[in-house]
Image (tube, rainbow, N blue to C red):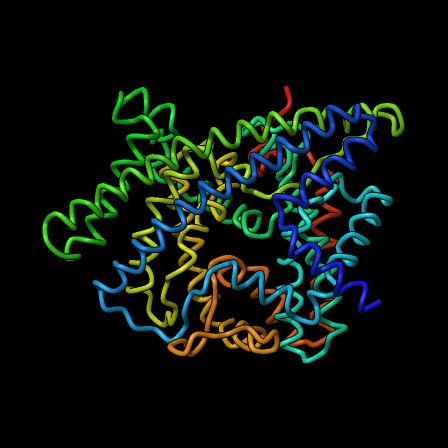
Length: 463
């Protein structure tokens, strides 16, 4: 069995999301009754779209990483916990003992929840099962018990399904993605921060009336409010902060303008890639809807996908770019913080993507919520750094020589990691029981009145 799982994991690692996802999409669409030709075209289109999204995100990643490192260098920040980025966290998760078992565990949990009608989401985002493995690995590091780590991974998979269901209507309405949910544990944990931020802002005179969604900004600012121009301006400002001392005037100007153009390109190209993705998803969602109408009395089923399909919205990109210097400033001024940011600044769009439906794309509110989540995240990352580093060592991950401890914004900064790790560290198996009870209670109250919960997460109220 272990040999089979090792081989399965190796195949998934080799194929990657851009090949594996189209294969899964084709199988699901064909099983649900889509014509083979249409299912095949949809699957290939989705794969192409994800390749395009990854290329554009790679451009953003490179630009923001260079900017972040330059700003940190300019400020002379010294910390003993280094941000290694989500690819490192994913490699650690899949390389851990929990990572070997996480795929069958997550699939089993999904099947059971579907059979018991506890979820509507079919989570086909297999590559991002690494989040479940990572949380399980942190629990393994806290308890030194593999069984507890595997149980934690199962609870994490269930948590993702719950969060995906809870936010699905908001995602579908705001982003125009029918039949889609986002059981992604980089984005979904941000929803409570958005709810709290909205509650606070709605009680502040003046601020509560500020309209700052991309459409309003475009209407009030004209060409200067166009997403591409905003990306250019934000990129130039970031470039100046990063490269003002990078050399002679020609070098500085070149670096600043390249940063501006790269981020302007991201603002234009990322939404176009998402449009291609939606072209491929429509036949799949239609087939799923028809399948359920014929065989399950119209029961709704969501296709669970990576939040990469959301980050192309101008509100998500704009707010995340504004949060880059804020995140670096927070790393300087927060007392007790020991984290220095490097590789994961480009993951901020994923962190804020699910703020948009709840805040109707209001960039000011999204920046406030993002600042709150990141501020809390620095302390979470500082508190989890020992477990993160221990997990990396157990997975034989090569930690840089100049890094005492490591973390990442994805998972290392987010509350599920803190909750899972600390509860099991303090209560051992009792912590797992508490986690299961908390999740069961949340699911009970959600299923008792789903519409109220969905409206709270940004879904439009039914008329």
